[in-house]
Image (cartoon, rainbow, N blue to C red; front, side, top):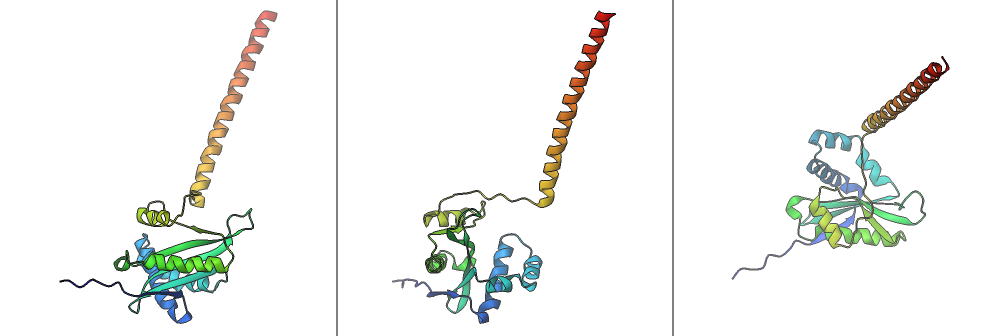
Length: 198
């Protein structure tokens, strides 16, 4: 008779100073899995981006540990839901679990820590940033009751300027064509009037 396989005990806690290195390594793994090159992820970490985020008052980072090994993290931030409302909202900026620890309750444990954080900040709502193409993450959040409220679209500044420039050129071309037609009509009307007068 086979013995049941027990799940490892998972503990979740706020990232401590002595865990920043472990957290940064997990963060770099998440960036690489999302498509960044290891070099780009390492450069971002070495520039102090992660360390700076962890010291911000409005940011809370949690690390999940199973069998003494870091297996996931969550990063949440408190801010108004939008620039025009005062109601605070906790937004889950990142939630990551290493592939071999998925489907073992790690993400749910991290979400539990985030919900307690939201309570402590007096927030009634929790939002999350989920890549549109990540079906597993979208399903996970949907199962927990998260609904789609907005679609966040992103472009580069240069791409936007190109598009705006193309739209301006199109408008200018249409305006030039309209003015040309008006001039032509006026010229024909003047020519007709001259013939009738002559």
